[in-house]
Structures are given as structure tokens and as C-alpha cells.
Length: 322
Image (cartoon, rainbow, N blue to C red; front, top):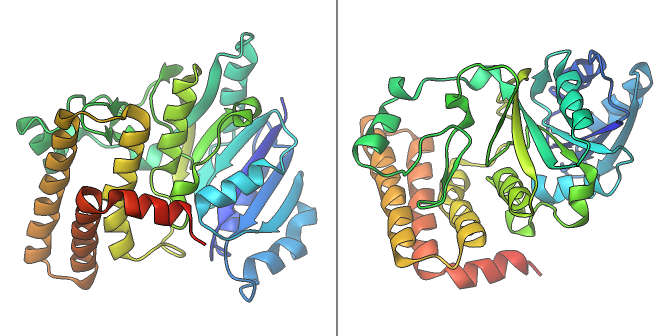
């Protein structure tokens, strides 16, 4: 099965070479790499590096320009692929050499085409919930109804962090999958894609796609043997105000779209969780009043206000930018 890698990038000229080197070490080489650059036209460092070095790699590299955020860039890349499998690999992710080998083996066994996507295991993001205070408080206050890693809490509208999953072998079924290191069957994109709501800063667009994939009747799996590392590069990221705002607005959109129309109880649970997070970050900002923390807090407050009082207007505005 041929693999097409789709990677959105934005001011990541330092990270792209490392990504391509990681892909070139795969025992199952991808057929093509589709880089979709969201940087303005005057920013040419990634483009120039690719043009100079693309012939040294054992696969085709296709370079495109497209603005609008990672969701829009990925949709653009999907339209350019030739492979039967589409791998979404972020530019700051480094794959173990056998990453694709493990994932492709499960797709090959799936003769009934029941699997929609398979995500890898980020070794760099593993943690124990009991060692983190916020997760202990979530349990004490019963803010969440499930704590299974990679599950989607359908009562609260919160995806449970995949990093809490201990190391394992084989595959397990999950609700949500990251777009940093996930491989999908190409045919699911005849009916699905990344939603345009997630234009600009696309927080949670990957979880939304995975939940829609599962809703369409496919299985989502995590492969414990397909290891990768995410470097969490800081270049090209949005400011902390936007991030804080999106941690409410994007989560509320996914909750509405997947579980809606929401009951009063679901809304109460969702906003109880959001206000707890607001309090938690507010307390941290008081202890360490850094500009970044304060901007995040303002963004979070703004997101809660919009979700409560300006939701329909906000949705219309973001889905009709012109």
C-alpha cells in the first residue's frame, strides 16, 4: 500500500529537514511527501531548502503554498495525494524507522476495510495521571466521566489525553487521534475532511476528524509499536490569547457537532469544566504573573463569553470569512 505523507508547515524551515530525514529512514518508505507551506510568499527559506535538497531523498517531494491554517492546508494536501494511505505527520515529529511498517501491517490485515485510521504512540508525551495535580482534581471534583486515554468524554465534551496511556504492544481501539502522527485510508476522505471551522489556529481539528470517522462506522486504532517523538517546536505558533480562546471555542464546536443538540446537563458539565480551568489558570497567573499566562487567561475568558452569549454570531463569522 503506497503512503502519501501530508505535512502542513509554517515558518518551520529548521524542522522540515529533520522530518524528511526521519521519513527517509523508514523501512517502509512513503511514496511521496506533500509539504503545504502556510507562510507568506516573502518567506522563502523552506521553499528554497526544498528546491535545493529534494533530489537527495528516496521519495517525491511536492511543495505547495496555501494559507488558512493547518486544517485548510491538510485539506489542500489531501487533494494532491496518489497513495492509498494518507499519513499526517507534523514537521516537528520524528518517527522510529519501523513506524510505517507496523501501521501498514494492520491495514494489510484489514481485508474488510473496517479501519479508518491508525495513530502512533508518542514516546515524548507519556505521563502518569496520578502524578499530575490537575488530573487528581478532575477526579475529586468529578469533572469528567471517563479517564481512559484517547477516549472522548461525551458527557463533558473533553478528549482524554493520549499521553496517559502506558506503553503497550499491538493495537487498541480509541475515539480520538492526533494529526501529528496518524495514517488514514484515503477513501474516508470521499465523505470526510478537516472542517473549515478550524481555519487559522486549528486546535482539535484532528480529534474532530477522528470522531467523525468513527461516527461514519470506521474503527480508530492506536498502534503501541509505532513509536515517534514530537519536538514541540515553538516557531510558527499562535499567541497565548488565541490559544486560550480556542481551548473553549473549538472544544465547544466539537461537542456540539458530535453530540448535539446538547442537553442542559451536557452544557452545565462543559462550562463547569471550563470555569474550573479558568480558575486553575487564574491561580497560576497570580503566582507567576507572566505576560504569556495573563494573555492566555484573557483568551480563555473571552472564549467562555463568546460560547455563552455570542456563539451563533461567532460560528457564522468564522465559516463566512468574506
